[in-house]
Image (tube, rainbow, N blue to C red; front, side, top):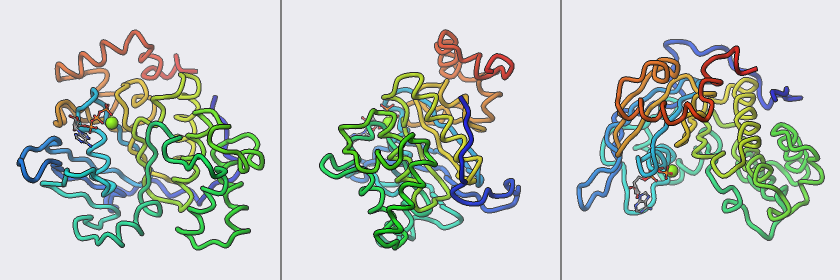
Length: 290
Ligand SMILES: Nc1ncnc2c1ncn2[C@@H]1O[C@H](COP(=O)(O)OP(=O)(O)OP(=O)(O)O)[C@@H](O)[C@H]1O
Ligand SMILES: [Mg+2]
């Protein structure tokens, strides 16, 4: 299933230096309702090195998306960051003005979510929508942005970039739409990409292809990833470190092999047991994965 990108989007970064500033650092993050004083997310902490992958797994409603949105500075009202901190490339995001946030999103940190169609305008061909990102974020001209969009479509392994460029969202499958969204998300060459349930709505084969694509983009461009899923198998095959969330709290956190082979918390043990039937072992035992 693994294929090679024909042309890296940016030169691959050297291996992460132990003392280098993390691409993303989250410290005791709390998200809540400032008026009620009730925190929904309570104490999420992790460091994401350049080119690293952190996974967040947990049941529906455990606070995964609110954590991502807090990191991206796009919490839905009335939620706010009520404690802790988020630093992107060493910069404390609580000090950012709305204008600085807009500059940062897309070009330093970016995201893809479930249901890609809802992030695209149904009445504009998808190529023009990605080209618009390039014009706004990188200041490219019309011709340049078209050429670059076609390159990006090839980077995300859309088979016929020129054809897809002129197609409307309704003409594309869910997997193709997610590739278009990934192309838009990496257009301005961010350091960090958050994939929040990005493969959840896709069938299993397409889901595996998109996960392969994310892994390849990481390898070829040094993109650091936060992969969020309620599905332990999705996280297991891609990440270095995993956080297990329940009711807004991280109940277990550590290297993926340790957490999955020797889960300490009852809830993690339950997750691992539930997923054994879906072939989690395949991801944990390399000789079975080929
Ligand atoms: N816009 C909102 N308005 C009100 N409550 C919300 C909103 N978004 C999230 N919540 C609540 O916050 C809690 C955490 O939600 P969140 O979306 O972060 O969970 P999640 O782990 O991403 O779940 P899922 O796996 O279903 O995506 C839930 O109890 C949810 O009901
Ligand atoms: Mg969610």
